[in-house]
Length: 157
Image 1 (cartoon, helix red, strand yellow):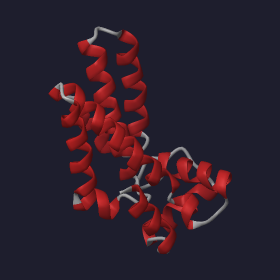
Image 2 (cartoon, rainbow, N blue to C red):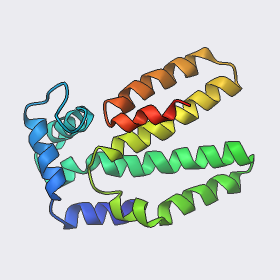
Image 3 (cartoon, rainbow, N blue to C red):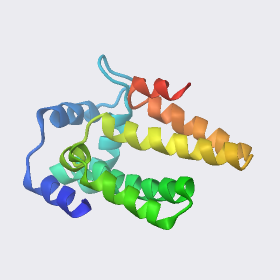
Image 4 (cartoon, rainbow, N blue to C red):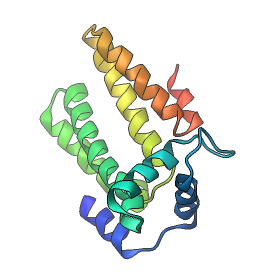
């Protein structure tokens, strides 16, 4: 999946939405009319590191693919108490059409999905192991998620 996303990142031009978010990164703000600011901040950081090109704008989605795969493995292994459960979780997430087709585009959904899942996993670990540090860290991740997309609030029961 990562190789497919890398090939798509390098072989296609930016989508109109990606170009729109890139213009936000030229003068990062604390928020925008239609989205919170995290996407602009991430794009700005990546273009500062790698220069202004499609790869740097789409670098975070490539990292997100890896992060989600690791999180899926951990959650499958932990919740099913079986390493094969973790492996099958990774396979299933990587063959879904939405993940495969949209996993290389930089949209506000990209950091939100990572932060949503990461928040839930860290909170689960904090509650099940009675570790306050994890619960506090999940609050930080939740706040970052809100800086990506407001529907992150739906994580609260």
